[in-house]
Image 1: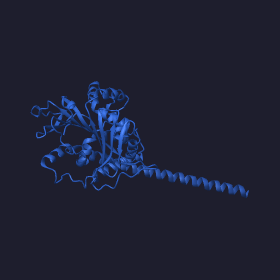
Image 2: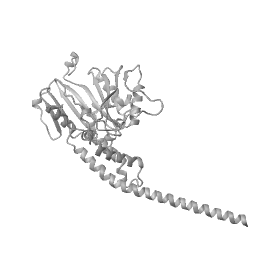
Image 3: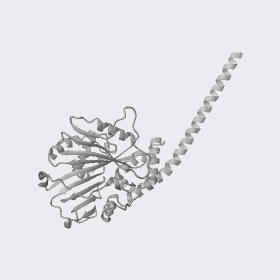
Image 4: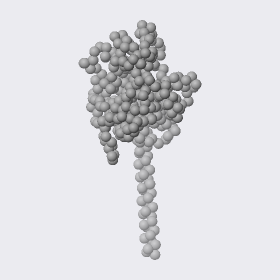
Length: 363
């Protein structure tokens, strides 16, 4: 339900909470937990459910059986940010290599202006790949979305994020709108909308945005968008499609363009893991659940999407793997041949030196 604070009720529109999603490797998960436990007690009230390991790292990623489960990592209350009431961090397992994290930031509308002035200045120093090289009109659109992106920047300023260090992360904004009228809303070519008239709530996806954002808007109560329960590869590649495209370009495109002649093992391993996770991690997941109502299934299917991005990346990774694996095999064979030739040459030189020394000794 919405906040009952009288000061908030008087406002026409305000952001109640925002959920931000990131994906962590085991090492990145360890860094996140260390950053949580290092927060200044004078600035934050922290309830952490994980401890640091003094030497090395704990294993946070288990053998994946299709049932990730979920767990609370920490609850954080900023003492000096009256606009942010609480940050909850929850995890589930995405596949054999990665952990899916939800940062839920609960908000008060008070002091929002102070929050904006404080962090907008710092945002200027953040080099975001997806914003580089934009034409003026596109950059203006990005600036209009900066308000929502500031909450990610705030998380980045206090915690160790993973993709969030470089990219705009997918998110869900929960917005109270006093004048919301569902009868006047119309879909257009650039939006998809789910409407629940019982709760007077709509969830909107803007299709032209290059980061995945959902807007849950209501003047009554919000639908529960249970992303951790819905999580599968269809949802992941809907949420993280733009980030995956940038990562693929950064790691793999250079081998197709000829910029890099020799394939680096870390890039090749990244592609192997992406291909295997796409093939295997949904095998034991179930897309339907008997305890869901028809309306809940309809909402879940809207959030998950139609699998278009999953299919796109599946083909992209498989075709790239076939191409790179043949080149990588040739690369290894050439490397082995070069080592063998060098070994042979060194052996022949050694034999020559031995013969020469024996001849000198005899003479």
